Image 1 (cartoon, helix red, strand yellow):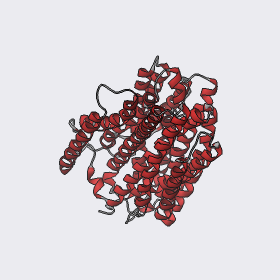
Image 2 (cartoon, rainbow, N blue to C red):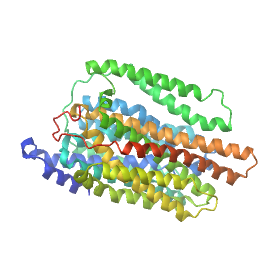
Image 3 (cartoon, rainbow, N blue to C red):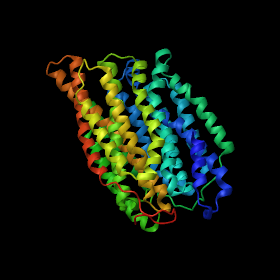
Image 4 (cartoon, one colour):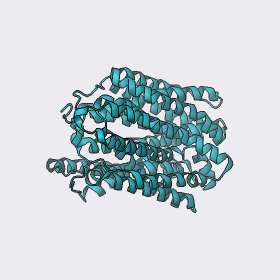
Length: 494
């Protein structure tokens, strides 16, 4: 699958670029990156279906369990800004080996974890590897693929990016129906180690490292800022059940203040080309709108991904396996749509894809606000399919438009910026939806509602929040434009 797409864009490469002798090397590099990305992305969603299982097994609350997903995304948000620097400073092969080694080590720690705390540590180490992998894949593709066939290539990347999260819940459902939760990690480990061994022996360097300086003040600012912000958000739900020692508003506000300091520092450093995360990417209107829209999609998607298993298992009484199977068709639809969407993007541009996609996303989320204790699972399946088609219509165009709008010297920073925004938004969406669900359910229970009715009410309130946020995506969709210019060497849109 991946190799065909790479052959297509190698054929499309203009002879004047003088890169014909590198086509086999480029195919191999992108092929290996795609396979490895598939393995690491699979793990971002593998926990969703397992959360109710782990809540019973490890005797933890929903708000604590969501940290297995939130800590993963939060780590990615902290590590991804540093990848902009890593990709400039180091060559393709050492960055790949670092990413897969971290991921494999985290998988091993998770498999052997004696309890919840060590399991979270394992997820954090896994996420450090995943964080490096995604910008590495994006930046490499932007450097190797000419603009006229980028839509198709990004579409093929989207197959990997959407099928992996789609089959994550199904695989964990299958595993949990017959085995212990540790097997979710034990079975991934040999695949990760094989990808590491193959990449270490076969991957070639395709970029030219520069002597990019690292700013040691920016790293802790980024970690404390993004970390505190998401930690505060996720504490809001927990606070509804158990009044905390420290109000969650404190880390939330401290995080926001430190993010402001981080931004000011980057603005100063980028004047000398020394920024950890170059914010000049945001002076490009197309890039900024596309990135903001991706943030809305990630909030909606991860919020829905965490709520649907809780609703299907705790309210409708489905098993983990049934939940995984019910969520599979939506993910497969995303995978099947991705290459078609990529080819269409190259022909007709983003607007005819992104506008209907945003409308479908909104319709699906408004539909999910109507769920009851006796809603047919067919209705939930239908809503999830509509949601998946909406996301499929938007992801490939938004990735391609956002990075295509930047000059090549900002690709690594653009990839890092998109990655950071996605992870912070995904973690914030997860935390926000769980907080609203917990608060509303606790309020209803205090008012005398029975447990099932209270949970349903909490889930409906959280979906309502997602539906309202989705209206922003609908508005933003009308402002997405295809980047002007066509040569990789030009500074598009500046």
